[in-house]
Amino acid sequence: MKKPTILIGCLSFLLLASCGVEDTAKSNTETTEILSDRTAEGEKKEITVIEQRNELEWEQLLDYDFDRQRNLSELQVNLNDDTEEIRTMGQTVLDYLKAGDVDSAVATVTDASWMSVMLPKLVIGQRNYRTDSAEIPERITVISDELGQQYTALECATEDERAIYLEITPSEIHYFVCDWQDEKLQGTFSSEILRMEDGAYRKYEGTISADGKVQGSMRVSSGTLDMSAGALQAWQMRNTDLQVYEGEIDGDSETAVNAEQFGVYTMWE
Image (cartoon, rainbow, N blue to C red; front, side, top):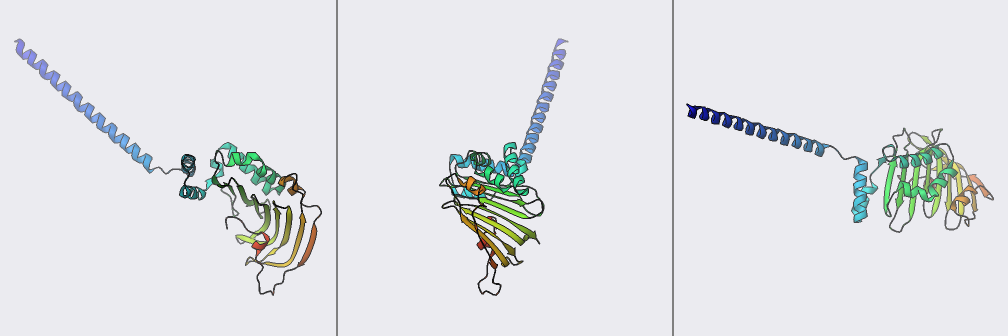
């Protein structure tokens, strides 16, 4: 009588063991499928522009490559998506320009902290920032080239909806403001250029036609500024001791007077 009892016990044990193996195998299969699905979802998820930029910049720090740098130069990051420090500094300069306070904008961009914040940890590089603005773009570009020279360009709209542009390079400070009509520069403009090399300063004031030509009267203020105390102080004193010329642009001339001759352009055109 004992043998059947032992046999039944053994069969029960085998059945339980087989069920356990089956459940474990099924569980492992389901886990694998879930992990595979999650991996697939992760691969499908698009990398953000900031993540792409940061990854490429890290690769550049390890091993500089010209093609990689070209790819970086084409990326545009929304200013509002970047770090708080970058957002604050970039928006501060844009706000200065919108309010017409170009001196404060120049002071901020020419300060050493500007590049360390807006182009962090990069000896060679370029960053392009933008905001989700309305009709007139809001853009900031900062560059440090292979020679260690630094460039900054900013574009936005003034509070009265005029296009405004500021560019600071090793060779000049360039600032202009112009009416914005039909999605282009058109109407009255003012363009100022200070040459770093010798302090030569020019300010052009006139009117741009719909086809991008200067027409009507032109006012030109010029002088040589003292650069001994630096570009910022010279810029802040730019409206003193200037010679002023006024005259009509010859509309019948065979040679077109292009607005770009007077510094009416942006680096993005």
